[in-house]
Structure formats: structure tokens, C-alpha cells
Image (cartoon, rainbow, N blue to C red; front, top):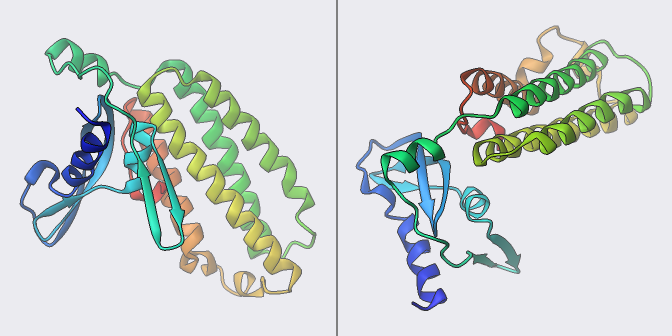
Length: 229
């Protein structure tokens, strides 16, 4: 079968995925198999139609997504060996996170929490400086993340690693944002109220993702959540 034909059928299939009728807007995590690649995705059900994020589809299939002016180019790999949906195969693909990865992931989460808490404290207490004292927390989290990457040995591990990497990048972006605000003397808004961070969308998203990752690792199985994207 022509590869182009296969890819177009896959893209079209995304918009009729599962064919589940739903209320106006809900979402749930489901297992998706595309071209022989299996992964957990968040299925958004809106007005009776089911959708998945293109970024998630690209990650599962090891494909690529690029942008050229107003055009999106989605490339999906050719089909691999058919997925065996027998009970034996299902149990192996739904295997939980490996002990080695979970151990390193816990250390990574702890390092990122220390980083987040230090940045939050500096912002809410008006701690002076140019951000150079935060470099050590960045580096500790980066080292822990690399160890988690080395320990990732299964599809579930790699999916969870992707969320850890998202969280690291988000914390780093928030860190840089607050450093910039400090340089332009715009951090007073955080120290004027004890609950100032509760209205900061970036901080709330980071906190929600951190809580989700903690809970996910404690279950020993991979799950996905929009807070970490």
C-alpha cells in the first residue's frame, strides 16, 4: 500500500477516533495505536467528536511536525509490524514504569521542586540578585533529568520522561521570566501579597503538573495530563 495513502488515512482517522459520542467537552486518557506504535493519549471529546493533540500523535509515532508560513506539515513513519492485541501482548505493553526510572524520576521531581520553591521565595520576598544564585538549582535539576533519561528503558518510561522534560522546560521558562521582571524592577507585585502567586498562571500550571507527576509515579503506571503540556 502506498505510504502516502496510509498516512492520509491515519490523519483522517484522528478526527473520527473511537467514534464515541460525548457531552459538549470532556477528556480522558486512552491507549492509541498508530502505524504499529502504541501510546497513551488524552482524547478530547467535543460535541460528539474525538480529537487528540498533534504533538502527542507525533511523539507516539516518532514522526515530525513542521510549519512553513501558514502550512503545517505532518510526517508519519511507515507502518511497523502489526500490533498484537492478544492478552499476552496487551499485558506487556501496559507494563508499569520501571523501578530504576521511578527512582530517578522521584529525584528529578524533588530537584525541580527545590528550584521552584527557591524561585518563588525569591520573588515573594523581594530577594535581590541577578539570578546567578539560581543557576545551581537549574544545574541540579538538569543532572537529575539526565539520569532519568538514562534510566528510561520502556515505552512507559519514555512517555513519562517526556512529561518530566516538559516540566523542566516550563520551570526554566518561569525562572527566566521572573529574573527578567526582577531586572526591570517589576517583582513588587509578588511581594505585596502573601497570595500573589495564586493568580500567576505559570506558577499554577507548574504546581498542577508537579502534583500530577507525583501521583502518576506513585501509581507506577504512565498517565498523561494537559497540565504538563
